[in-house]
Image 1: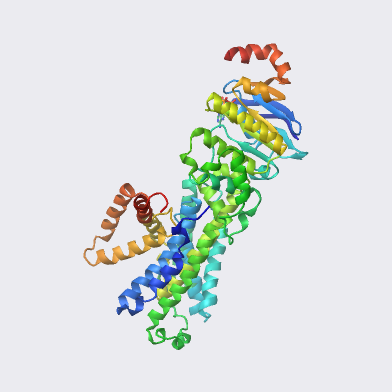
Image 2: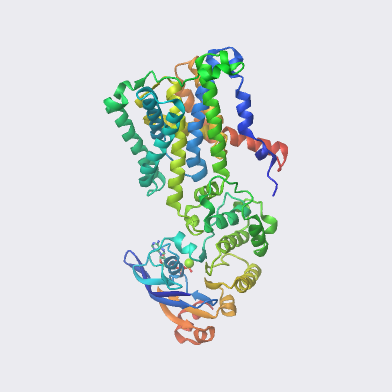
Length: 324
Length: 245
Ligand SMILES: Nc1ncnc2c1ncn2[C@@H]1O[C@H](COP(=O)(O)OP(=O)(O)OP(=O)(O)O)[C@@H](O)[C@H]1O
Ligand SMILES: [Mg+2]
């Protein structure tokens, strides 16, 4: 079986290379938007390991995003830990909570599963909001420090950039690594078992799959990457706040994924870019952004149910014949 | 090989399977027959762990599997197919069978290797066996009903079963398709040394290949024995064979 050409292109590498020159485009704003997209696209792609790959709808992904964000911020700000171990700890902490919450969630199915993920996320939000001594309560944790980036000064070109530009490169490189890992996981035997569960969880049992166990594993991996994304976002945002865990934050990656197309690995990333760019454009014209977003989603759901990437691949196939 | 001891299942007040016992010896081909609603599918679901019996025991090669979950029973060497086609519709035919190899052989815990080439030779060979070699790369959902039944059989066989439970393997097939797939089944059973337990409405098929037949009616066993014995049984003739001819 030869793999279709489109699957052999190293997309992660290409996207990484294309995004490299952003800080040299001359506007601080471009770097800002690009960092936003890069970090949140990881959040959406982590969610899609559950939604598109395993067929699990979660309404509470912000829990793991915020747990990663708080963990890393606390370690760096209050305990003076260096960035890299703090970042990894953020991912591990998110994975740990995903394991505990997921243990209960996978015992339920469909809408009950979704509601329980939401319930756990609201608990996390309440704790962030109320536990003043640790999380800073309503005020959150402002002034999360940037990672020490002095080592970058020896790099050509990049050495003279602003701190925010340098952080863009840190985020870009780390997110690219996460993408490479997520891609591998999706295409692995483990990933294949997840698609089998998505397609027919009942039948999956009768080929020897312990469905709950695999769903829990997917939940944990997905939570870990959400945590890694949140950890970067806290630093980018220069602060971590309770609304990172609020249910609207859980809706964000869902909307991105549906917008971009959940049937494709790159769908959520494209959706993240589309949503953030659209948001930037439209808020500069009108204050009715949520209204416009609602309209866009309705059109998309009815006219292009496969999302942006789904529609493009279908178009590409029609133009290029069956083998494209 | 398989010993079922007095299993019962009730749905609400309705007794779908009532204290049914059955023993299937190694490499035997056994059939369960009975009119619609007799409890055949429910009986299979009780054996494979899909439903839990209210009473009775199921023993597979000396091990009690009465309360075991389906995935564990499958790993112990029991494969099954379903009356209503039950496959992985969005995957290709190749992926359907390959997934069964991956899952059954416990390779799903590997999340770093590539799955693309895993068990390719086994999968290709098996697709050849069940007559789907030319359809390997088609989406399972796009196949005809008969082909989907073959996929279902492929999935079941990829689980390296010792015993295979087939719930109406030829449901919805034409007479010619039925004949072909029964021939295929017989061939595969012999080749892999399988024990077969199946249900079937086509009496010609049943009496041509089954070595042992159990007749269910309203959840109860009314006859059991060799095809000859069952055919001679007066009650069977009255309730069942008479009803259909
Ligand atoms: N989950 C369920 N809940 C309630 N009743 C059920 C359930 N499953 C089966 N039944 C009932 O149990 C009886 C036996 O059903 P079963 O499917 O086992 O029969 P069958 O012998 O396989 O019939 P067929 O030849 O039509 O496939 C039927 O009356 C059916 O309505
Ligand atoms: Mg039935």
